[in-house]
Structure formats: C-alpha cells, structure tokens
Length: 84
Image (cartoon, rainbow, N blue to C red; front, top):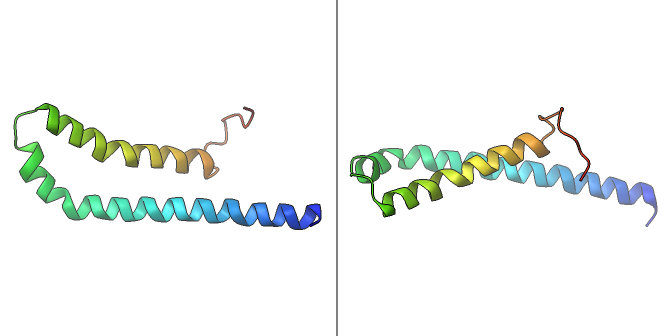
C-alpha cells in the first residue's frame, strides 16, 4: 500500500466517522423529542431526588458530549489548535 492510497483510505474513514456520529446524534435527538412528554410527566413534575438528578444527567450528558464532538471534529471549531 502506497502513501496515496493510505491517505485516501484514512480520509474515507474520517468522513464515515463524522457521518455516523452525526447520524447517531440525529437519532438521539429524535428519541428525545418523542419521549419528552413522558419525561415531563414522570420526571419534571416530581420533586427533585437523587434518582431524578441521575436520570437528567444521564439523559442530557450524552447529547451535550456528542454536540461538542461534532463541533470540534466536524471542522466547525476553526480557532482550536490541532496540536496535542
């Protein structure tokens, strides 16, 4: 395998990873929209407890992390350094 084909393959993998991350994020948001009414009835209408806080952190941490990942790796954050 020469360098050109290796770089082409890496580029394809990066594109596929970005596309799959975005697709997963869209499905997750769709699920959140479908179940938001149930969430309001079962979680938001109850007094705060450890269980409700754990549910909310679990429910909203994943979309926050995915949105950040899409922003950074999707090329939207142009002013961030690429150095490790």
